[in-house]
Image 1 (cartoon, helix red, strand yellow):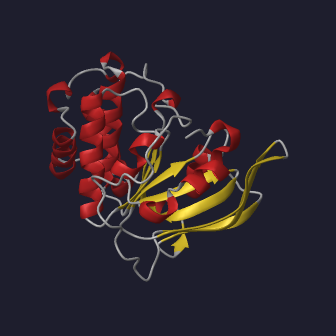
Image 2: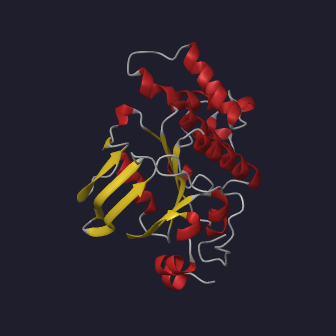
Image 3: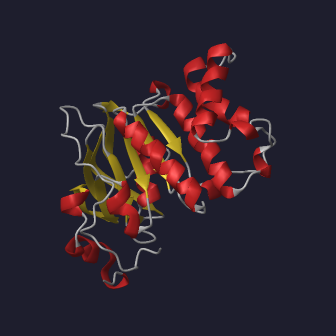
Length: 261
């Protein structure tokens, strides 16, 4: 369903009450501005994501959703602003964040197996010189089992369907066992069975105290899947618990004429 579809913003089935914020937020974004060729894509963003929430980032095409994720990861250099993850500037070597990119941005012709992709999730903790051992192989196998891909472990990644590829990249992130997960449209191009499997894993991560931030486009499923939501359109429109933030007024401010009841 597109972002302009009719939805019931009051529907909250499947979403538990958001957990009480802890003293140290999972992510803090301060005065963040990102521009491409002098055109602002994100403008003066202030955002606090409490630890232990399952948060959707929604907004129209070109709103800066993917840019926000990449800026948090340090993949884009901002014009101004700062990002903290659990109170400290994010550094990839700290292994504080696991990232699931958009499937369309990955070179699926790279010759590697499903198991090898899952194993890549262990590289951050191993460093450059240690080779994966029994513990790392067991972690990769367990992650593939959790996403229902054990039977495909020896398959070339290019031979999988879109939904299967997405599951494998989710397995790679699970192996990292990070406190924070950033996912860029993990439901894009997957079937209903895969979508349900991904949702179950996201809820499991939340139950274990992990923070999960998901760029999401299907407004109809936001109340069911997420307990926290950020509405974005170059600027932050609103952010907070889904039950109080995902409202008609905020959606109209976010989507403008593209939003219809």
